Image (cartoon, rainbow, N blue to C red):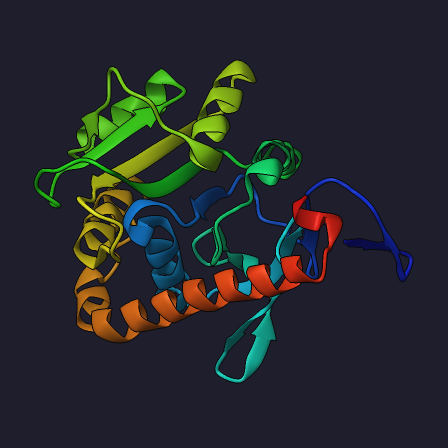
Amino acid sequence: MLFKDGQPSEGMAKIVEVTPVRLKNPVLIEGFPGVGMVGTIAATHIVKELNMELVGYIDSDKFPPFCSIHNGTPLPPARLYQSKKHNLIVLLSEFVIPLGAVNEVTHEIISWSEDRKVRAVFSLGGIGIGGSEKKVFGVATTSELKSSLEKSGVTIINEGVTTGVTGLLLSNAFLRKFPAASILTTSKDVNVNLIGAANVLEKLGKILGISFNAKTLEMEGIELENRIKDLLKNTETAKKKYEEIESPMYR
């Protein structure tokens, strides 16, 4: 449910700024849940390490009804942060975007990025295949971004399939000639993949010229893993309870 002039109104997914974003040609990092929770873990670590400022959130009437609580503060589960120092924006989600909202969320991310003159979007995540977690793969919508990935040691995916927000983000960005790339690590199961997230951060840091302390992420791993698992469990429980009162949101 979105709000206009203090009153609720039905609407498509929308990025709502609580603090105006006025960066000049920033980079946007997107980290949503997926295989190994790589995207959410990596994006959360960037926000913490760079001490980024909360500036907004994504809203949709198709999202499950809950909020995240961190350090005693209630927060929207899909949030937008900025770092003026690094000219960087991070968009992260702590819940899986419902299938019925994926298309509108993807379009909103690209449209908002175009309006804010974002110079490139990087989507972080995992792919459900075996292999070394140190190997990082990528795909890009422009030859310039593809070259940046290769120079940073990212193996380019020539044939394959990617789904969800990341998949639609890439295909729509390509059709709109918008610079976007996905950086992915292997995840053999659905468990939280901290090593993979650290490796993705290392490659992203090389591309952006920012040195992320991935070792810190690995050391904080157990606490972070438990927090994310609890969050996902509580999210699913909240969704089921809400469905039991016959809300049309999930029908």
